[in-house]
Image 1 (cartoon, one colour):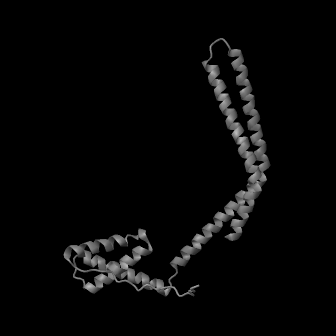
Image 2 (cartoon, rainbow, N blue to C red; image 1 turned 60 degrees about the vertical axis):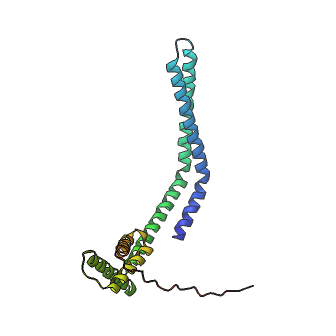
Image 3 (tube, rainbow, N blue to C red; image 1 turned 135 degrees about the vertical axis):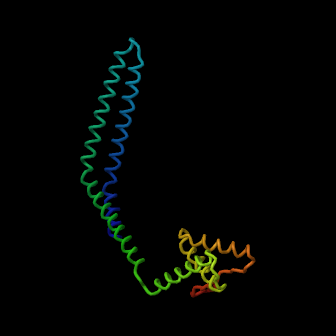
Length: 197
């Protein structure tokens, strides 16, 4: 990945002067197009008097646009080689990023024992919540454990929806006057060297 990023950065550096020339030529084409449109508008709006002068201005504006477009074509031709290098480097970088995402996805799918246990705990918590939501009698400690786990899951990934389940259970418990506090894991403080100077 680092090699691909470095190669892309080098290709951008190589293309930088050509990019500047290209932008300048592109701006010249846009300016010439605007001048030609203005000349066309003046010619269309003019009366009989002064039409010859306006036709000449229109012709000059058209020639200016042709010259600007030819210059843009020449700049594109000069920049073709460096742009090909940059395009190839960009494609390599995108491929490296795709490979890295695939590698990360495979890593998430690996069935390590601790991940399996976490998944089983999540399934148990969701089953307990579903039984509670369907009105089945649930042991209080089991419900507290399930809600605590759902709350924990929501802190890991906000978008997974378990926060809504935990909050619904908290609201129900508050209406019923039941004390439902999530089980808090003791905070682990980092061990480090602390110096008082």
